[in-house]
Length: 287
Image (cartoon, rainbow, N blue to C red; front, side):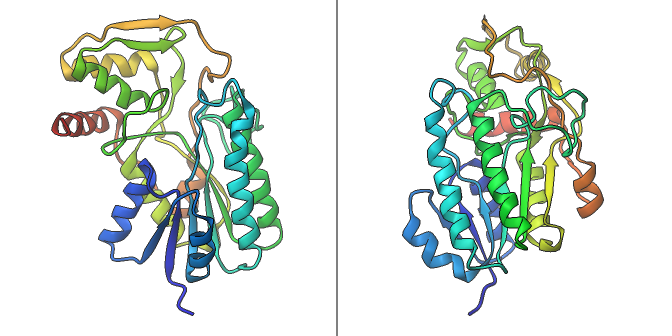
């Protein structure tokens, strides 16, 4: 059987759609399978040399009050791993979360060897899925765990409690109030969507380097700094409401990309100011 295809599980989301566009542009055959279509997943998986698992139904905020909401994500990953046990030649790339699994790291930038200590149920769910993926890797399967930071860019839909830059730009466009949890000095690592896609394409072509990798921008910014950049770009003062800080929110995180750079030669190419400007152009054109 010809097994030259890539399967994107949960490929209709922000990152999945961007990755699908790139594969199409590169004329590489691929399939997109929704998280709830188990029959199609089982049917198509034997045709694929790589499966990129992007599916997630939660955010740190959405499952904060009920950890049981993470069961759907864990169940899907376990179903996938059960199928992959019969396909040791298939490379799995699992999208975890570099922004949540480390909690508040003791040293920044944080490396992949740092302790996993999530603060949120969402981060705990990602960490649990990572452990199951690692157990498959320990049995000889090619399994890559990717820990991306906060992705942003054109194509990101507006979603409550998710996508800080997208939300800020929408507030600027609509002159709507912006809510920030805490004092705005929480530090995040924001990575442009094209850099996420480029790193994933590199990993798809190199199953021999299956491992665990951070995927960040090599820099970090506070929420207030991002807000200031957006206000300068849009020439609008955002009406900001500061809410009490939440216990699920990491205070500071910046990812160390050294392993990914050394193994694959990948480096982020889009700085935050440029990425925000590109996204602002897209937001205005999407009206």
